[in-house]
Amino acid sequence: MNILKLPNEILINVLVISGAAGVRSCARTNRTLRDIVVQSIELQYLLELEQAGLSDNPECVLPIHERLELLNRREDAWATFKYDFRTTISMPQQSSGLYDVSSGSLFLGLPEDIQDGEALGIQYASIFSVQNERLVWRNVKVGMTVLEFVTSIREHDLIALVVSYVVTPNSDNSRISNISVVFIRYSTGEYHDIPKKHAFYICSFKESYGNPNIALEIVGDNMVCAVENPGRRDDDSLYIFKWKTGTQIFPVLTTHDVGIVFLREDIFFISNSLFNSIDIYQIPNSSDDIVMRIRSLRLPALKPGVFIEHFACRSEPNCRGDHQFIKNVSSSKPFYENPENAIIIFSIDFGHHSFIMITHRRSLLDLALQVLIPRDLRWEAWGPLISRWFNTHNHETEFITITNGQRLLRYPRKGSSTYAPIRILDFNPYRIHLARGKRQAKTKKSVFSLFHRAISFGSSASSRVADLVDVNEKNICNASGCFLTHIYSTLPYVQCCSSETFNYHALIMDDERIIGTWCEEDDCVGNKIEALHMG
Image 1: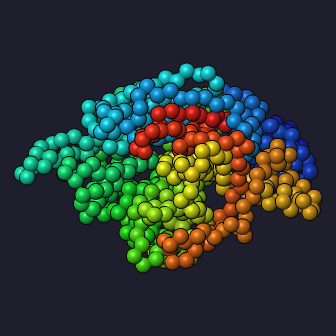
Image 2: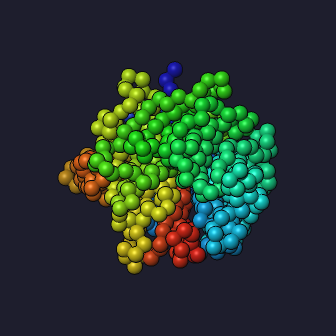
Image 3: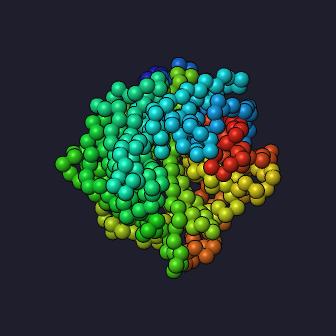
């Protein structure tokens, strides 16, 4: 049977099921199939989603043509820095210093006393997606000091609070406190009903050493918690649990930092400032097995006598467990960022100088899964081709929440300039290919035409090309007295720069907006917050 004799509606349904790769392959087969792809709104939407690194929301009630229009508008806004509205976010109470932005919501620590900065809970609200929408804040108080919190809203409808509470004075009259994790439903603010217990114990610490630094991440059934004791670093430990049952996975690992990022449900890495590396671990399915380090990725060699003071990392959105369905996405929201495509930001601070490194989550996962390479990899063997380094001594790095999906914000550090533009750097491989094609088209028009037809089949994406920073341009990061040599990295990106200037003290971003803050104290998130909604 000739497939071309089938009705177009059936052919389109088959192509939708085959995915974007199947659509592109079929469109290259002959002119008839190509015309079907170009003229089909459903197939154009599918291609645009893949090229933007997004996933469709199956619960969305909007028709396909409206989803495609919103997608094109969103991508145009980010590519050209054209926000559709600007609004101030009012806070019922000043933040304790804890903060996060995830899944369209802003989370702030709820302080007992502004002077001591300790949080006894959190306050959070879903940030408006339309102008003049009323912001509704919800408070969660647990009667204990909140050291840290993490969210897993779209996977588990979950907020996990890491809390401390005094247990008993020690023999030397120093107080001992316990650290526990409390599980809250995001949608209700009440205790979560999925885990067997709404809270369980992690470890203890001496209060005389000061509050520990905490990192917590939850993906699928797995929870990883890093505890860094400022007064006794030999007690720094990494704890792994099945959070729904409270089952601990052994052994308890020694850690040197609190930077954790999941690469998939059973694979995560933690930053290691002592050995100047990224250590990747695999969590077993059974509690009878042990956690294994499967790869260590070395960073560029440091100069003798130089040490990393702070080594943090983050990727947003977080990955999800197998067979986990998206929750808490509005039926009016047509799409969301695909975590598999997200970039990871590493913030590396030497005290007198700082850097950030960018790479893709999937790149590190590919390295973790390779079997025919050494377990310990030198920087030169893995890093230059899949990363991009930046000096940040003159740019804002106070908050690590300056990436979302495949985009990164760059903005001058507070005090370096009164007003300055904001730059958006996009590491999306499709847009880089498109930019290269357009640049070649300046000399050979047909090159871009063929390229554009082969990739996007008549979509409006050709208007979204910003300045290309290619592998042969600006790819040497000055060592600045920290590394033995200057750092060569070749991960390309495209960028756009706002024509407007801003005087924010710091920036945060999510998948829809850029959030600027002003603050009077260095340890607070902001006395005033403003959102630029991009779409």
